[in-house]
Image (cartoon, rainbow, N blue to C red; front, side, top):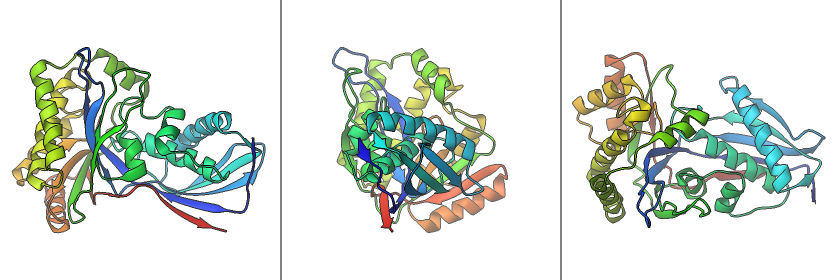
Length: 328
């Protein structure tokens, strides 16, 4: 066991994860849980942490807009696991959650929070292990590793997929996206995506993709590898890949998209001339790829004039991993 190290304050800042859908090849040598995603600069977690000596594992405070009960329960469970995996005598983390990612909106809040807190636990004890190893130890990345490698590196990421449950997933491809691009996040208010037990049951009920669908999906990923910073290629891939994966998930999420309002969002953005539109993960957040901040602002104003029950944010691609600040 390591002794607790007090006196140092660490602040971590993460991005959020957009994931455009998983698919699995059921053939003998096929890989499960392939897919791609993009890290974005906002929303993200910003957590200030200090190690103190206490019999408790954590003390959590947060900004008024943060759903503290959800975070507190998750953090407590995670740190109990960390104390078993990486024991530190008497260490208690005092965590102040300054900014957060809304849970169950398709932005990967669980992975970013778990990795940030586990990373803080280790760093404040004077330890550090590679992020993929940390994710595996705490049970993240069992399907997708986009959030794990996004936490570590940022960028556009393609999942390698796995052939067996004993295999650890890896990143097949990474690229940095142009800094001037923007992504419009559009979320129907009061809607949430599938998570937890419902998510596990949904995956268990999925039918395998056809050979023609597998061929199309693999072609989309290969095209991204060959043209990662081509705006038109990424836009068309978001649309076509999203439609194909959405149709594969239609039986468990109620259609190509998870919520009726998502169909309306796609139609509105299409009317405005946007091509690259896709649901992130289980939704309900829809993402639209824009050339520039100016185009994104114009679309935001136009959407607000059409519908008033949508939450709309403009974000940039995030081409770096988690950021750290240390103070005494």
